[in-house]
Image (cartoon, rainbow, N blue to C red):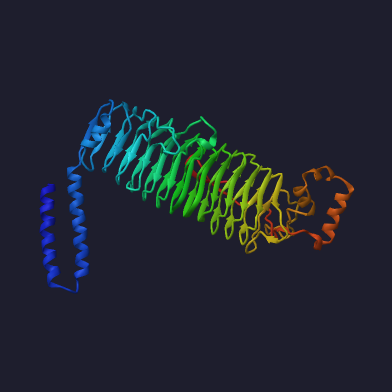
Length: 452
């Protein structure tokens, strides 16, 4: 059947060539058709030749099977342990069943991919080397590994889980990645490491232990979606990355949830930081980005830290139960901050500066749980502006021992004077139209979007 189809396609290809010679006016269109037919002929031939090959465990058995396979073949790995690192230098599918283990014997990479359109699926991949300088990984994908897919695997006892070093449009999905607990946390490897890998997608993975859950640098147009990360330094760590998306990820019990640094045009949507220690969201030299629908809860020191980040839109987020709701400093300018909820933070806003900053947009401010205000006209907006910082706050931030004087007559006099004479207010954040109720928030719970 395939031979018959190919014969018909070749016949039509010859007819098109004759038409090209006869009609100059339609030459470009027909050339496009010719290119499409040639690709289709190649594709059908490729599929016709691909085979499924059963492989049984043994020392270096898998590498021999890879070397003997043809482009497009599928290697079906029986249950058991395949010892020794492997190199994939042609387009193959490596598919395991329950109990299929590839063991790198603690030397270099367990699997190195050096070809496009490779599939690695359904395997336990373990025991890479332990050399950070050598970038030892469970799966190491070079710049020749475009469109490689790593899915439904369990990666354990490796230095780095998956390293995408230069491929375009790779996909890492539905894996369980358990990193190292040895060494200091900064000396461990990352769960997924990306370098210059445009268009790659990391989604639906569970990552625990190691250094950072997902670390990306010098890349663009990446999507990190619906990953769950815990017991790490940073859940997601961005450096020098552009035009990318972080959506509906969950960070639990990490030092920092989501750190966006030296990156522009990032969309951080619907993420959750639960019980992270230092900061839920951290923006350092992050510009022209959208931070929408995220939630930080569980007692971090700072729900959000914004350092020299400009031209960002921060809205529809919920920041609650932190020591500081949002720390805003180092000349961050022209950010739009509105429709957020600041709930039960010990200090709602820490802003050390002399400029006056408005946190509302088009008549929509933020919700502040400590704002004892009235809404006489029942329009959902407080009748008075909200100013989270005053002169006393500024003094305490600069001189922490001044907390001992908070109940003294002199401090009370200073607060009264500032309220009666606004001209002596030291600058800071003003919300002219604070909300009376927190906005509704859409969260990802057990794989489903729910409104809270």
